[in-house]
Image (cartoon, rainbow, N blue to C red; front, side):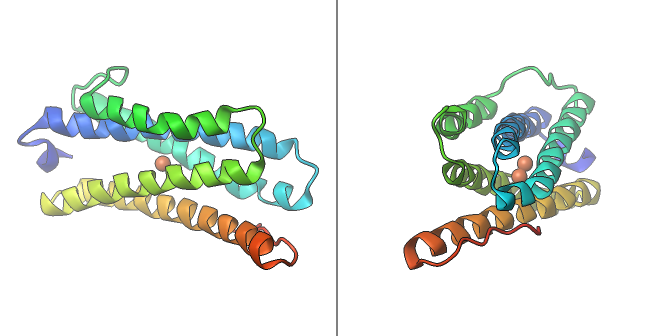
Length: 179
Ligand SMILES: [Fe+2]
Ligand SMILES: [Fe+2]
């Protein structure tokens, strides 16, 4: 991440802290949804568990990787920055939905999809920045995680579509058990 950090390392750390804050929230959200899914008696929901668990683990890897990068740049992984505070505030609504006791699973998937949209935009931004700076090393690392984020979003979009199709158009619910 040398080229990216050349001019304003503190601004780069700010961006990475923002992403880290969001990834940390994402792990929390997935953990909550996974625990509710495991308690379900619906075979279709149980059929989604492996995919959702894999996505949760990818979010955790993203968080750890970002913390390594922040440390390597001399930043404080437990510190806050303007953007990390902004990300935390923005994510609060989604967190409220997911942590409420009386929420139905389709609503939780909806909230997760909203989180994944932001997550995708965050990695897109990092990727574009690395391209602009000709930082190939950072670009490869960002692209890898951006591709994972695309899968998460695609899967949750598909899940929301299946619920909407069944509810609005009628017919049996067919949740996506394959990623
Ligand atoms: Fe993520
Ligand atoms: Fe994600």
